[in-house]
Amino acid sequence: MNLLQSAVLVAHVLAALSVCGFVLLQHGKGADMGAAFGGGSSGSLFGAAGSANFLSRTTAILATVFFVTSITLTWFGSQHGTVPQGVMEKGVMERTLPSKPSDVPGTAGGTQPPAAVPGTAGTTGSPGSTPSEVPK
Image (cartoon, rainbow, N blue to C red; front, top):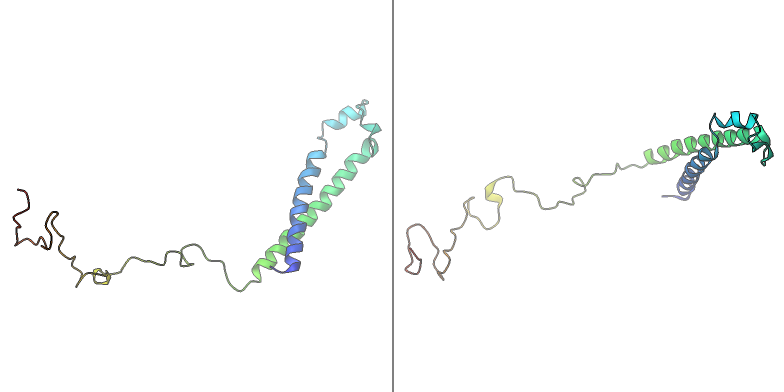
């Protein structure tokens, strides 16, 4: 990520947080009726109507900055030559299942080796041989 893209990303996050803050600071439409009857907001820093104009304009400017940085970050993202791959395409699962049984290591021609009968050492437990140690 280059320096310009990092700066735009920081501006984008700050604009997003600022828009959230300024929207929360604004009064609803019902608060204007209270100010008309002496609701106490006339003694504020911006006056009775100045607060609404300042907050509305600042919110609109910050929303525009957020929109422009969103478009800019989208453009930066589209300029990269490679498309990010998912987990399956990255080769995380390097061991894949064999396509045919003969590809399984340790087998000859796709057949499984005979299993040893428990309790018999050195015998293979094939169907034709019955060791004497095997309980019946």
